[in-house]
Length: 359
Image (cartoon, rainbow, N blue to C red; front, side, top):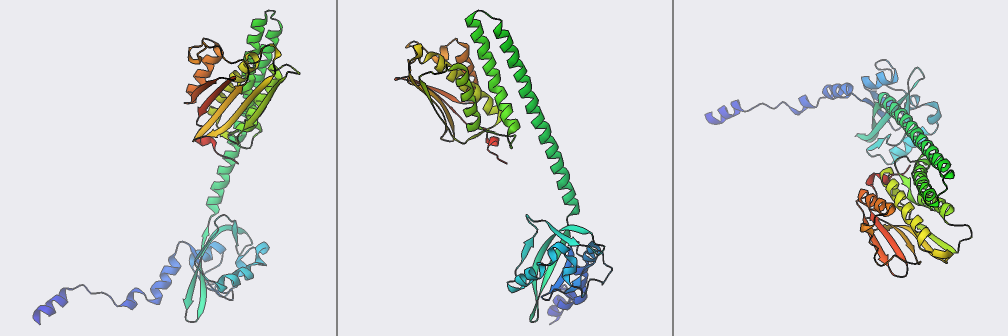
């Protein structure tokens, strides 16, 4: 008995339950919440409001109690609020509000405040109330507006950069064209023409990005179709019996990927136009971009004369094929050549992951 008494004397004393959960303690917790708290009845009357809710809506202590909650709703939303409230009480459940929506509260002075609201049903006897937690998100809205403004300014600047780069490249192209006109030797004139169309190939990328809604990625089908048309207009004689088939998958390319892909297409297509069909022989050129495994495949094929038996792409000393090899390495891609019944050049590459974005 003595030991039991000693044990009892040394044991920690737990306060009675009502000391932890007294109405006064709960009221203090409710009032001290950093979020605005409103307890609203099914009839839409505010039964309780903590100090933060009173401060948020501009009321003195105790003034919100007994008022209609619709008084805190802006006029333009007020008409539909009772139906929304009745719908909630018909199937009460914890609900977060504000995600993806612009919600506003009406202050006593008539000004509006952007808010987020969380709802939780509270049962008291045979009645149901809703506990609304209200957060003022004015500062967040300001930060978001500043961020949007900053992004819009940077996008405008980036668009202007693409526009200026395109214009500068067009100036270079025009200078090459002027110089070409003063050259009598056909070989050198052809070299200047090739340099000019290479510059135009890169300028076209910046033109497309300037006109696009997404500055991070290029519509590959639109770009390659425009590039093919430009090259055919430049190098394929009017009335040529050569037919050109095109098919471009709706892929997106980053600027870092689009430039080498465009230049590769330039070299392969101009080479095919010049050498695959000698003496204006009829034939077919096929230009395609397809999804291939986890990446993409660019193909330029013809049913023309074919490559000389001794020709090796990687051993070629021609500028065009040396440029192609360097660009394929830049893409971390692979070059494949198929002979027989013409020639097919295929380049496998993986578009930059950041390019798969749209606006």
